[in-house]
Image (cartoon, rainbow over all chains, first blue to last red; front, side, top):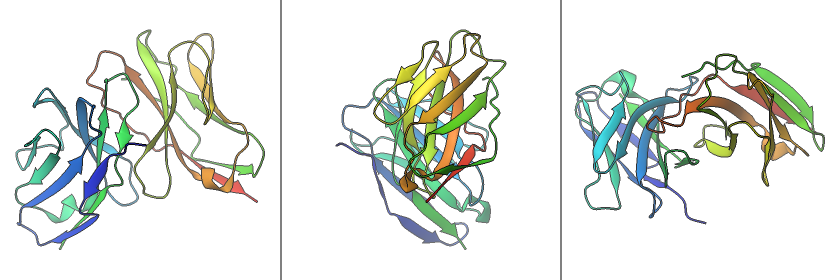
Amino acid sequence: EPEVTQTPSHQVTQMGQEVILRCVPISNHLYFYWYRQILGQKVEFLVSFYNNEISEKSEIFDDQFSVERPDGSNFTLKIRSTKLEDSAMYFCASTVDRENEQYFGPGTRLTVT
Amino acid sequence: DAKTTQPPSMDCAEGRAANLPCNHSTISGNEYVYWYRQIHSQGPQYIIHGLKNNETNEMASLIITEDRKSSTLILPHATLRDTAVYYCIVRPSSNTGKLIFGQGTTLQVKP
């Protein structure tokens, strides 16, 4: 069964450093999402991406964040200058149609020290 | 997006049916009810969704009341592996597909 994959599974970085989280969505999917979950808190929507552009973003997704689909298979989330409060699990999701179910990856645990 | 209300936690005996309620009294006509679950910090997993009619798949059944103000997710024969946080999410068909998660219901299946 096809699945969404994410790398790395765990990333440790120092405050102020740039990080890139990578996702490979399911191949025929057209809509892509990033969510995050701070430890012990609920899953929060960050951004949705369709047709090579952002279709919606949350208040969390400020100028420090960016997304890209560089090569038609990968979908990346970049944080330009990480802060301690960016420490969280980051989940990528994809779907073939926005009304259909979203498939989530296993997540990347980001730890900012 | 319509707000949902779920009990924070529930217990269920292994092998019995788990019935998880959700209130969504402000739901609009074009909003779907989705259920996802999250097993111990893994990525959320889709379970089922519906608009008006009751739905059933290999994982669960979804019962939506006639006025659509509440729904119940039914896991017919709960196993220990069904222990998870279950999220009821109401989403309009016209938005970008984003999911707004609440706190969900933590279901503990006990032997």
